[in-house]
Each structure stands twice: as C-alpha cells, then as structure tokens.
Amino acid sequence: MNIDLQIAEDLQGCVNDFAALVGPQSQTDEALIALHTLISSWLLPLHKHVDDARLNRPVCVRLCDLNESRTLNLNYRGKNKPTNVLSFPAQLDEQFGHDDMPLGDLAICWPVLLDEAGKQGKQPLHHLAHLLVHGVLHLLDYDHEADVQAKTMEALEVDILAELNVGNPYH
Image 1: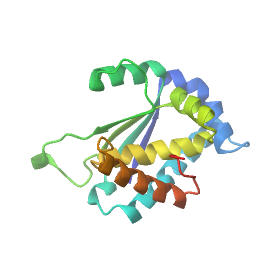
Image 2: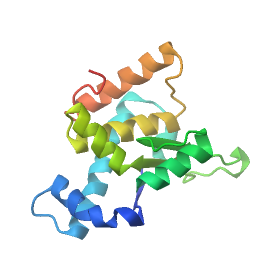
Image 3: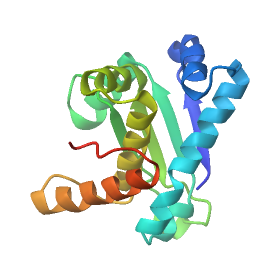
Image 4: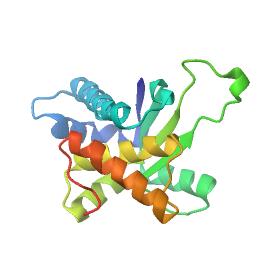
C-alpha cells in the first residue's frame, strides 16, 4: 500500500512533536520520513487479516487541525464538530478503474487524537495506529453501525493491532 502522507499547514509547527514521538534524535525531515515509514508498516498486517486486492491501492493520510476536521465532518456527515478520523473512499466509476486507482483518503485530526490518547491513557502513536487501521477498514467497506458489523470490525482491529504490539483499544 502506497501512502501519501500530508500534514496540514496549521500543524507544521507540530513537526517537533512528531519528531519527539518517533525518536529523541530525529530532525524535522527525518521525523516525517520516520512517521511515513511507521504508518506504512502499521498497515502491512491488514494484508494478513483482510483478503482484498484493494489493499494494494494508494491511500492519502492527512493529519489535519481542528478547523479542517470540523469543516469536513460538517460538509460530509452533517456534524459540526471535529472528529478523530474521517474516511473518504475513492468514488471513481469502475469503467475508468486502473491498478493504481486510490483506495481513498483518511483525515486524522491530530489535536483530537492527542486529546483522546491523553484521556484514555494511550500512547499517541498507538492511538494513531488504531485510527489508521480503523480508517482503512472503513475504506474497505467495513462499518460499525450495526452490532454484528461492529463486532466483526472491532475484532479485526484488535487482531491487527496486537501484531503491532498495540493493546486492545476497546478496553
């Protein structure tokens, strides 16, 4: 899975925070490369647990701020508040499909992620891994609106995250 990592302009000042998360010796460019590498590696176990050829398609992961998350959530879901992760599956007509057609986009709100991680006693990188896995599963049409769907999706997330040494996010 090819990852296009984007950092919102308003978060550019947080690059030092990213550097601190990925390693104490990281410089700005090294930190972003390390974060990209981590994100890519976190998505590898999906292939083991989900048999879907769409996992080979590119995904754009955008770390956004509160305002961008709120705007996206309002425009696409009718909710006037920021949220941790939004998934936008590529909606291209299949007749124009090709091998490198994107799977979709994920918008992860960095301030919400940090706030939730703090309140839930989680490491920010572990919470990021969870939101990435959760978001990609949404791009693959998994959902958690009905109880049966939620149990299936959550069980997959728990299994995938266990391979990344990330604890069960639902406990």
